[in-house]
Length: 225
Image (cartoon, rainbow, N blue to C red; front, side):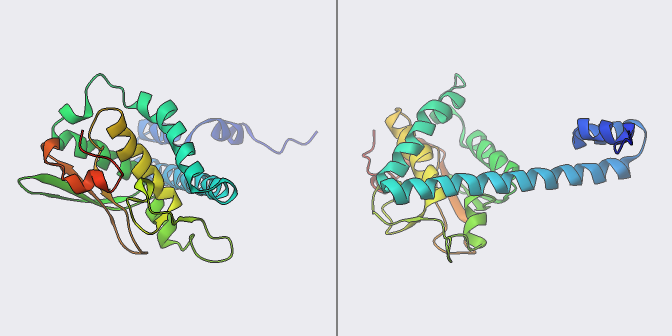
């Protein structure tokens, strides 16, 4: 039998690229390690893009087959069964300093291959994102054309009371704002998703959550707790 795979082939197939990078560093070869890290990042980027499109395709199917309210129900299930337990760290989100809350959100966006700009004033911290998930879909034109993803068009809390919202971005309203309020907290942040390609997603994190304006609650169909 002719063997097509060498021992080196098999070892590389079994070893993640980041582990290969560590091995290269141990051998004193930082250039090889850097190249392996870059390859690992590109692998992750491809998987992330696949997953974001998979999620958005499923949400589009739910909305087209069952209606926009069903999209919210699906997101609520994710919120209750995954998001809420994940955020149960023993420390109330509202009790964290705004700087800590901003760092958590910025870290997540960078991990999602976004770009982050930061501004601060006396009242709040503002994060401006070139989003690596929902914003990526908008900028790539995935909501246009023959197989366009759904835009929610029933004005409600899940659309931030907008006339239209990209379906993927509805997890921001439902999981990050509506449900946290229902769970007895303030919104994770006050989010302003893009309205057109090229725009950035803006998050406001108030230093004192009591300063969150009434309009921020009204646009998600809630009153201040």
